Structure formats: C-alpha cells, structure tokens
Image (cartoon, rainbow, N blue to C red; front, side, top):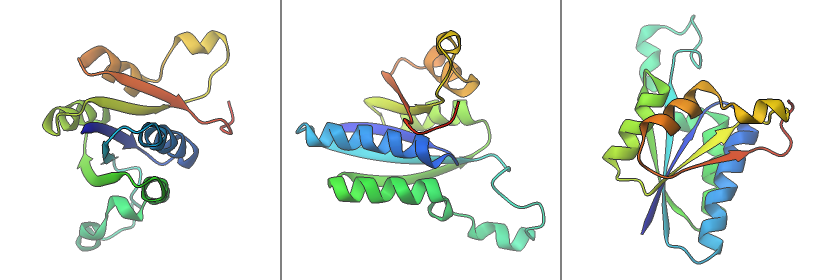
Length: 144
C-alpha cells in the first residue's frame, strides 16, 4: 500500500491537479491510500461566525476538498480526510509522519520562468524539513 498525503487548501485548480496525480498512480496499477489534509489557518472562517458555530467547520465544507474527494472516488482510491489548524508546513510534516506517508503531493503555483527556481513558502519549508519524497504539481489552468 502506497500512502500519499495530499495537503489541499482553498485553490480548487491546484487541489484537482494534486488529486489527478494521485489518481494517475492508481491508474498505473499502484495500490494507493490517500490522506487528504486541510489545515485551518483562520482565513477560511468568517470573522462574524459565532464561536458556538465554529465547531461545525469541517474540511468537507471546503470546495477544494469536495472536488478532490470526487476525483479520488472516481479513480477508486481509498482516502481519509484529515484536518488540523495552525502552522501549515509543520502540520503537513507532522501528519505525514503520523500516517507514515510514502509520498507528499503538494499543489504548487504556476510561475514565470525566473520564478520557477523559487517555491512558495509552505512548499519550500516542507521540502527542506522532511525526509519523505515530495511531488509538486501545478494546475494547468491557473493564472500566473
């Protein structure tokens, strides 16, 4: 069983790129189990949400997570939804360790030729602080 961690955030195109990559592993005959991680950072919540309602926050209410679930369902990939809150890069590394992920699949931003040598801060931090293989996908249709 190949365990893959897919940390997704709000960008649907990036999340779909990640999910399609994982689906392609299954299409190639690999037995894949995915862990879809959404890290709440506070920006996803309305500041007007009363505290007693915040307990209803769930990653499955996030469009990007729901779309990833659809792709994985269609590909027949078993998956688990994980959530965390706090420091995104460290949470990704910690969850990868806790599920003993064989691979982390991050969604990167499309960049200019000069910008391709640089990753986003979360991607860079994960790459520099994990011993696990990391794949960075890029959404084809995302604007630069």
